[in-house]
Amino acid sequence: MIPKEQRSRRLYSDILPCFTRKQHRESFEVFLDLLLDGSGRPLPERATVKSPSSISRFLNHATWNTRQLCRVMRQHALQTLQDLWEQQPHHRPRLELLVDLTSLEKTGKFSELADWVHTFNSVYGVHLVVLYLCCGELRLPWAFQVWRGKGSPSPAQLALKLLRTVPAALLTRKRRPRLYADGGFESAELIQGVLARGVDIVVGVRCTRKLEDGRQLRELTVRGSLVKPCGLDQVMCVSWVWLYRNKEPEQRFVMSNLNLGGKYLARIGKRRWRIEAFFKTVKGRFGLERFAQHSKQGVMRWWCLSGMAFLLCHLQNIDVPVSGPGAWPDWGDLARTVRFSFVPEVRRRALQLELDALSAFQHALFASST
Picture 1 (cartoon, one colour):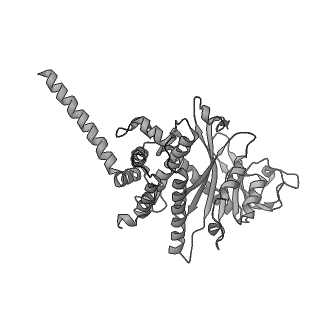
Picture 2 (spheres, one colour; picture 1 turned 180 degrees about the vertical axis):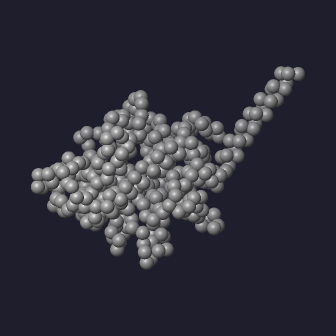
Picture 3 (cartoon, one colour; picture 1 turned 120 degrees about the horizontal axis):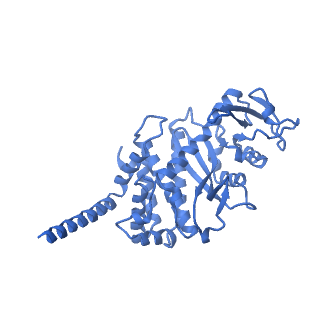
């Protein structure tokens, strides 16, 4: 395939016009080089081609359009989905929407981020509700919202807000899309809001949730039972699995508006774990939680650029696979491929600076010995 035809190349080409000034584009290329190092530590102080202060100014103060960058990524994600459906007109893969909350643990004080930093599930830091789209082999981060603590919209309400950002063209297909979520998103408001959008739901649920007949879910004895939870006008199918990770087996419940049967519902309920693989990759390889910026704009840009690095590598893997179908790729190899393809000059300049420093050191050492 010709490089210009690759989706990752088209995305990168469309991102560059977001940076109208030369110095902003150069800073972007240097920061992208740090992100694509694949070590998960894209810290400005590791930059050699530009000073750490210039990278910090690029993130916190430079006047480039963050919204335009997000629009470009979303447009490419949408086009990639539509291309996939056009290639498979007779058996189009189902669109699956995964929503979850991830915590970015932080220590210290962040005065400008005061309303973003809270404690949730014993984790102190910033907490993001993320919407992630899966369709066939596609894995597309779509949007996120910051949870702002008690008294603000709940994670379930933020998930509904994220769902509204998905174009109707993606939701009005012959195969109805499904939304997957864990037990933190089992509220009646979310379930009814999802169904009102024409989307089916598969959601984790607490074992203590009450039914209209007065029982709790844990009192059910038949997987695939059709029940009516309190607060819902919808009959739901309920199933469960047993986890044996600890000494005591743990029962996990899942329910859906679809009558899928006990075994099948329990099996597809595990699909929501794919978003956990995304969280692990974007944190471990692309430094999502390594932000140390003092402004909300800097933090937001850090998150957007981290997600962009993931998307570039994923599109590269679709065009030129480095692993078998269905296998999670080696993201270190992918990041190195994209790094060498898109920002080779940054690598050359960094290596040349290191060679110059080495030559100067050896010259001084030789001069001192004579």
